[in-house]
Image (cartoon, rainbow, N blue to C red; front, side, top):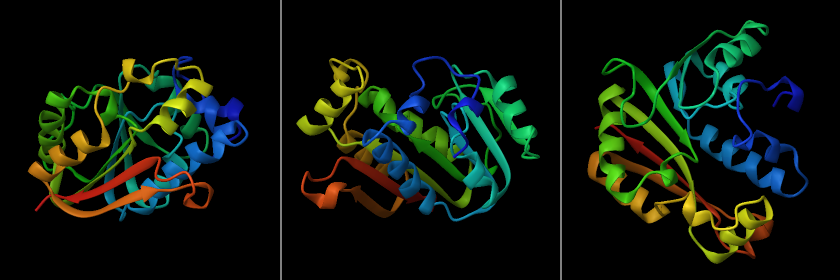
Length: 209
């Protein structure tokens, strides 16, 4: 990751600040590491909800082109941050339900902590839209928090009194919708602190058959 002050173009709702906090920061970084470990590399990757570009340094090592779609981030400011490091990124305003990209274009679509913000009935259309922009054999990698009391407590610590006002779908809603559209490769449960607190985050890896 870059030093905190280098990330620009996002509002205060962006979680970038949490990555640098003690204890909680390790959880935020680990979920990204697990998602990135599932990315197989190739010509083009699309990150939906790309925000400040926290994944871009890693994706640059795996893909020839990095594309990003985000609802709120300033694409001009984020692009400028990485152009200064000779990393060209193709960024647009947009959302998961209407991805502003052509069909059959990407090797990988990456979604980190995005799908839980959709309503359960929006999960299937979201995955159908992801399928549209993927090449045959392309992969979708997503990460979502696991809906359990410990995670609600953790979100309370970072300022979200009722996380269910923001997280409208559970990991089960997301997983079942993905299975209707894609072939499942693997599901990974993130279990920090030696697993004594159980799983707190789920990573899904699915393929367009």
